[in-house]
Image 1 (cartoon, rainbow, N blue to C red):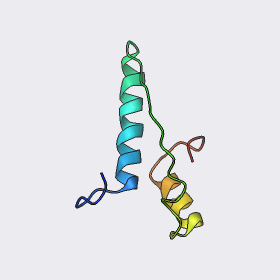
Image 2 (spheres, helix red, strand yellow):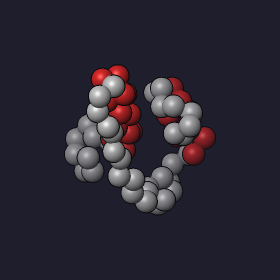
Image 3 (cartoon, rainbow, N blue to C red):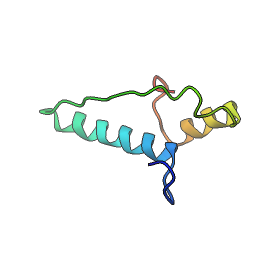
Image 4 (cartoon, helix red, strand yellow):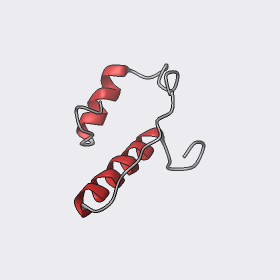
Length: 64
């Protein structure tokens, strides 16, 4: 997703969550996720605003 027009970390998370829900709904498939260390990815953003935006986008609270 990086460095592409109209692509962001937020877009990547939205796509991931959407794909997981799609797999859950089918009931006969397994979803696997590879997580990467992104500790420095949000150093320059307002963390309260980031968390609020994730909630507004419908990201599950357990994920936030």
